[in-house]
Picture: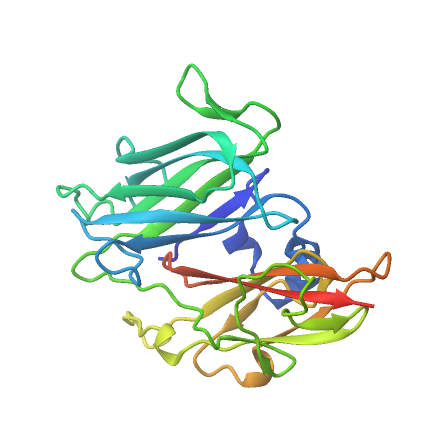
Length: 307
């Protein structure tokens, strides 16, 4: 069974909405970062950060990727995680009380993070998945109502819902990964940079209103071998890559990749925005890769648009 994720003021179903190539036109605006948004969620097992499926008794963490147009999201949050049974109808209810929670009441730039330990006596046969839920309050404090539920002091906030696989004798999932050479711009390697300024000329530069190609290359090992119940089921998993930018226009809201996807289908076009004046403009890019079992990874890049 695949896992699911939802992040938006009205519970925008990212995993479900990124459905097929026919949805591209409606997804173009979804790829533009115009407000504080939750883009992804990553689970890491303490003993093995590459694994996304913690076993009973293991410690792990859940980290959310929160983005804002200026690159410095300011938010508070409330998160919790519980064990759930399998369901094919929406998100499942908690089988018991949450086994971990996190509350950051004042808005800060810190990451949204929930550290937890899966109960050692958890019955994985009946509750093989975990379900994390909560609320992100951009530029506002989160408060708890009388019933214990969170709300934002100002605004409606962003509801978070993320389901992921727990480890067991027949269940183990690893996070896909953006390696250092995973992203390229116009055929040239596009490395990450700690500098987020156009002042010193160290970032890649592109001219306003020009078209460019972003390419995503993932390691063959990221496409994990799957247990096939029938011969028609895939032998290896596919991965979904979602690109976002703070300005300009992306040609697609997502790419579905397999180990056999040819290079020309691992690209997404991006059109540089117009400039309102002659001052170079910084554009931030966010890339999320996810499998269908709760594994995710994030990458960020930046460039400067010049006259």
